[in-house]
Image (cartoon, rainbow, N blue to C red; front, side, top):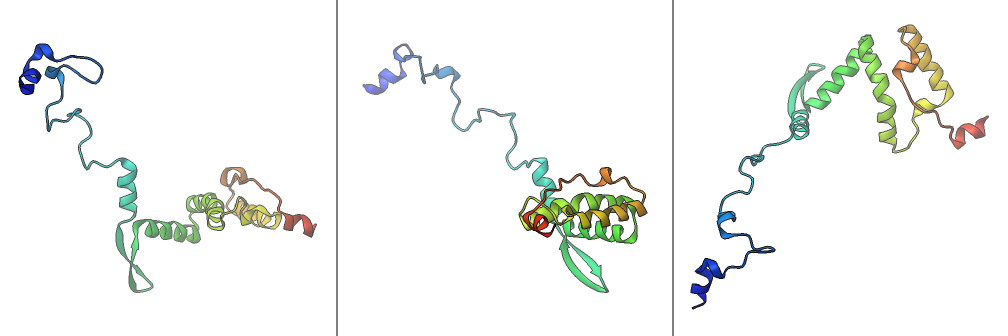
Length: 148
């Protein structure tokens, strides 16, 4: 007898958390059929996966397997060492941040006056403006203050 009550549409009360039966989702049907398909990855995930792919490089006559990120980094540094001004500019912009991440501290080794002087001389040789290449704060540490 209970089944006959549920099947009778006039006895069904529509209200909070009780939508009309005609508008409910049917079993197995998505609530957003035109939404993102399963398995589609966003751009950052695809980019990261591409950087993590393994490639074979020849280094000093020997083959070595490295990630594409490692290969690109080696090419950038080698171009900078060969004198490519754009590569030098990019390396000099990246190095302070990378050193800070490696050391896990807020200051870099380029923050003391002697390193700054050497860097300015290198920039003069390549005729690059110093303000364009490195924008790093130069906080003083307790070691520098004790030496003065």
